[in-house]
Image 1 (cartoon, helix red, strand yellow):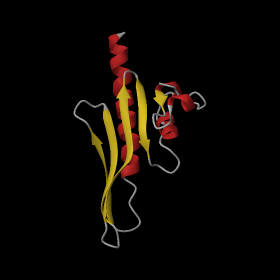
Image 2 (cartoon, rainbow, N blue to C red):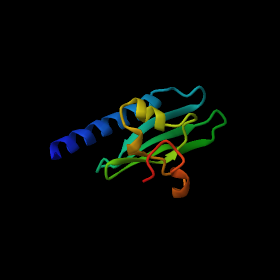
Image 3 (cartoon, rainbow, N blue to C red):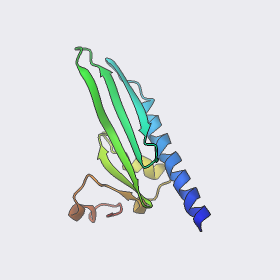
Amino acid sequence: MDTLKTEVKINTKEAIEKVLQDYANIPYAYGQIKAEVIVSRDEKHYLLISSGWSPEDARIHYCVVHLELIEDKVWIQYDGIEGGVANDLVAAGIPKDRIVLGFHPPEVRKYTEFAVG
């Protein structure tokens, strides 16, 4: 049983990194902006960060996506992707009942197709 849990966690982590890296690989159409995936040392936080300079020489630095592993679920703490990252995680093999839309208040989550927490 522990081996299965470990395999599931490894697959989940790999799926998260692949989804975020796919987004990071999309070039920005303007400015000197790059995207990169940041993973915490304990592999519980996954961030997609954009940074650089706009064409108007304004500094750009912001979090596009923040995912957190809490117990056996993937919590989407912040989602700045236009179409949302949740369905990409599902397409990568993570079941909807293991994804929590953490950016929604708890009373709203029960009306989504995803886990409540």
